Every structure is written in C-alpha cells, then in structure tokens.
Length: 248
Image 1 (cartoon, rainbow, N blue to C red):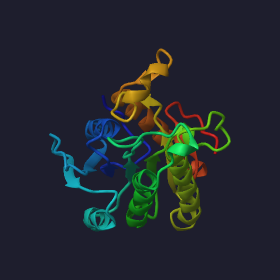
Image 2: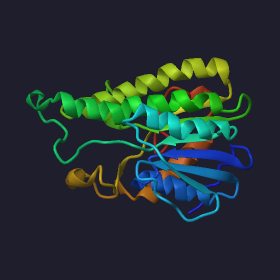
Image 3: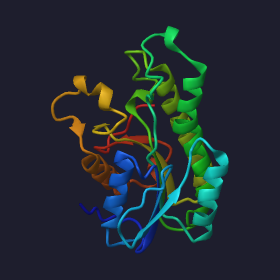
Image 4: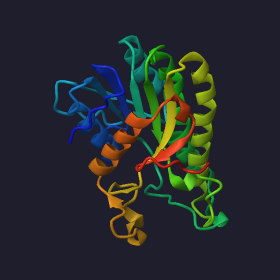
C-alpha cells in the first residue's frame, strides 16, 4: 500500500481535500502508510473519520467559501504544509449529467460544476499556498481530467465539465507563475487519474477499454509516484497517472 515520498522532507504534512471520496480516501490511506509522513489532514464535506494516529479529520465544503477558510486557516497556523491534493470533483448528480448537446446546457448545473471543480480548488490554493515552506520541495496538486484539454477535444459534448476542468488548468498555470517567484522550489500541478472505479465514473464505464478501469488505490498510488518525480520545472502543467503530460 505504501508509497514513500522520498522527495519530501521527513515528517512532512499532507492535506487531502475530498478525503471521503474514492480517490481521496485512497490518497489518505497511502500517505498514512508512508513512514516519512508526519500528519495527514483529511478534509471532506462529511468529515469522515479514518483510523490512524497520523490522520486528522475535518470538514470542508468547496461550495462554501466560509467553510474553506474555516477549515484551512487552522491548518496553515499549524505549521508548514508540504503536500496538498484537492481530490474533489463532480460530473453528474441526481438532477443533471454531462451534456450531449448545447440544448442541455443549464445555468444551475454549470454553476455547481464550476464551484466544485474550479472555484473550490482555487480558494483552497489561495488559503494554503502561503503555508508551503519557503525552501525545499512542496507540492499543490488538484485532480483535473484529460477531457479538460482544449487541443485534444475532438468529440465535443460534456460542455460544462470540460470547461470547468479547462478553467482549473488555467488557474493552475496562472498560480504557478506567482508561486515560482515566492516559493522557487515548490510546484503546482493538475493530475489526471484515469478512469477510476468511483461514483463519478459509474454511469460511463461501459466504453472503457479492458485494463483501463483502475481501482482508487491503483490510481492514487501511481499519482503519488508521479508527484515524487516532479520538480519546479513541471509546475503549471497537468500530468496523468503514468507521468505523461496532458496537452493543454
């Protein structure tokens, strides 16, 4: 289970936002098993409690800016944060799903996707980038998606989800420029986890090629290995579970 992040300092602090989800929970378990990790702060809307002395649970709602501040100000005050992963995301809900035509575009569902997939991660970054240490490697990562690539969009559809992830990638790129000035050894990246066995992908697994549907543990483990290999020269970009760059 354990992926040792050898590029981060001993007793590093990690924050997982979206810790009650499939991939977020897998990140928590992997990091808690890393002997180099000192603390895993596991934040989610439900405030799910994990077993383990290293794990500190908490509540956060990415649709509520006050909740984001309330959850993250104490984290920042508790000392340097070396790894932040925003593993939250939404594609569909009880009353909405990915659009197949422009006739399906809806203001309320678009606003919700952008709140969770774009604005929420941006506000997490605004609250925690100053908590990254001024020296040494540190990482801020957010789950993106290959369908957020503008240059790779040849199928159309899924308008709001694609746009929210493309906007997230632009936020990451823009933040990376300021981060390079203030924290030269830090990096901020997007991560594409592949198609994972979670509630987000459940209605859309029928067309996934054999061997390309991953467990949360598999995807999170590979993404941690990718994080361990990245340096500040990779900041502002998006990488998949195999370490390949996703086209912007």
